[in-house]
Length: 313
Ligand SMILES: Nc1nc2c(ncn2[C@@H]2O[C@H](COP(=O)(O)OP(=O)(O)O)[C@@H](O)[C@H]2O)c(=O)[nH]1
Ligand SMILES: [Mg+2]
Image 1: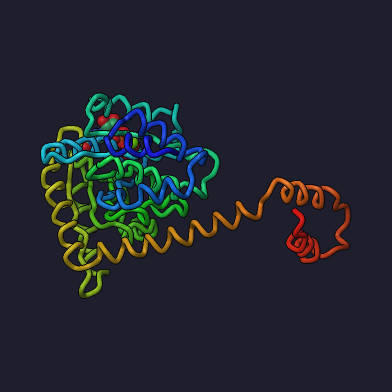
Image 2: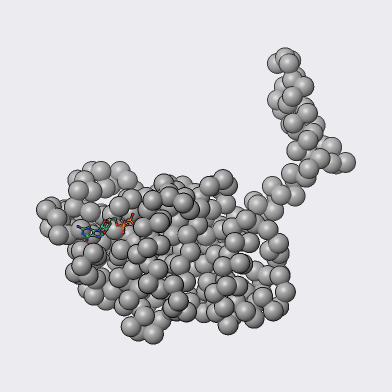
């Protein structure tokens, strides 16, 4: 990656962004230097996660939130990660149709990421896509993800603030607790509040949040919206800005970022160890030694020990 590419990213050239993001996704050609060079450029953006069940209205809501940021002269990057519908799938097509009003807007860049293949590296790659978008000067980066607390797909660990989107039918308090959403949400949205049951869910959610929070914790606010007609979005937007200010003031924002930074170091070390270890020869050697096993006589420890001892591969 040459310095011209970095200049193009910095100048918010969307074609270059697309190309570089594809490289991040396919893990090709990007070296240490590239990420080191964009690192200082990549810390100014606010990263927001919008997560919740499929069909809850996350894309519609994101689309509405974008309008408010644009009104404040902010630029936005969106990374949509949807395991249930990879690139060609229905929901993403829906996202594209809905969001393509921004196709020629240089202040909005929307990208879908596939979860195909290497699941383990998804959070890492999604973070790196965020780094590239941040380096292009986007003020806000929104990650839209399906579901919550699903291990590798848990983007809440990769953002400054997580919005959990529910619908009136999302279930009772016990189900919500089991789903693990209480811990990850900084803000709750009950979307589709044009439907029955929204008020009741808002009430029970608020009461769980109050009974479970510790003394100095910020209690996540609960907002009711109807994203498809814009109802409640302004309140949500103001709540979002307010929550950001609060977590910046109480130190949580910085604390989170440092934790994230440490995690990314550990993640990178793990990845390096794996890629250093798994040379082509090593992969072949493992395959051979496994293929040749036709009894259970030799201990698995012994076989693995040999793999690690052989420095010639
Ligand atoms: N009734 C109602 N429908 C909504 C609302 N928000 C979104 N929808 C619709 O719900 C469907 C799924 O929305 P989408 O944003 O794609 O959900 P996502 O899968 O969470 O991204 C679409 O048909 C939207 O038009 C809402 O507040 N009320
Ligand atoms: Mg969506």
